[in-house]
Length: 237
Image (cartoon, helix red, strand yellow):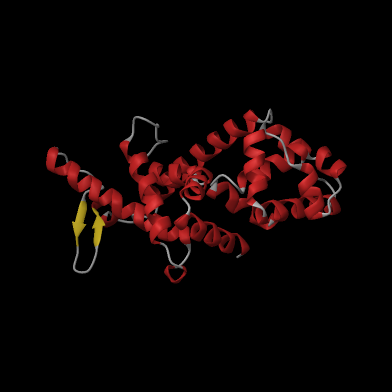
């Protein structure tokens, strides 16, 4: 998948460039928050939940330690995050005599958590985690759209109705993903870099302006770590 290939290239750049690493972490804060929410059963609160800092650190460690032969980067990062949190809960257990579902359990050739041994662990519990993470991601996405003066209803109303126009918007998305500096410009200026994207994608600037709210939404979804939302939009890429 092109998206995964692009992400791998970004990770390899970030391994050698701290500014690129910081930028990658900012883009994937949605993923980092969603991973944290799995363990908290709610949206993490910055400055309050230590788990969020631990997961952010684990994500950075995943950037430094990742190699292509280790599979998809986000799956690799998720495993590292889990391992980090196991260590964290082990240390917490030494100071508190509290039984936690996330307490480490040593098995013959691996280490898991108590929650893994509950009956049907990936049914209701996993669904609950996913729902909580989805809700958190949608709220954060809605908040960032508001910074552009856009609501979900605006996006729905501004969605292209003709296949030709939809294809033009897809070309804009592809151009933006191939030139991440333009995505950074979008976030920094709160404006679509229309001239550059028009030149690269061959899409008329008037078309882009008519569907500005829709384009802002899909560009944000593909550049800020909104893993769940992006999963529903991959047919556009």
